[in-house]
Image (cartoon, rainbow, N blue to C red):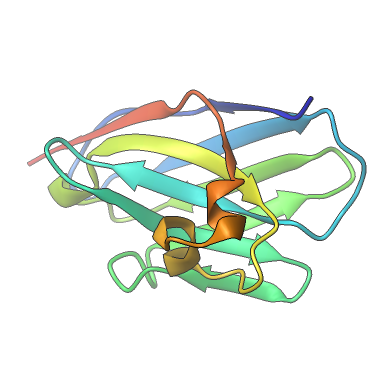
Length: 129
């Protein structure tokens, strides 16, 4: 059984940085898409970033500020978040799915692959002005 456990969230001021970590277990190496999805207070879920063997992709709202990376040997996924803004506040979830197109926007599309996504329990990020 695949398990995803996020950590690294917290409270920072505008302009601050955080590094989220997702420890994955329960699967052998595969080229499934992995990434981060967030949900702010009163907002819909938003795909933030995605990564697979072919590369990375980001939501326009975080491009140039967030960086997704992974240690495939240790099954760890990272999200480095710099220059944080109050609108980045929300619960951040690590995700894994057999997405045909490994794009940030793919996490919230109504596709069979996206419906098979596995999520962690989430880690809270709060950015104050």
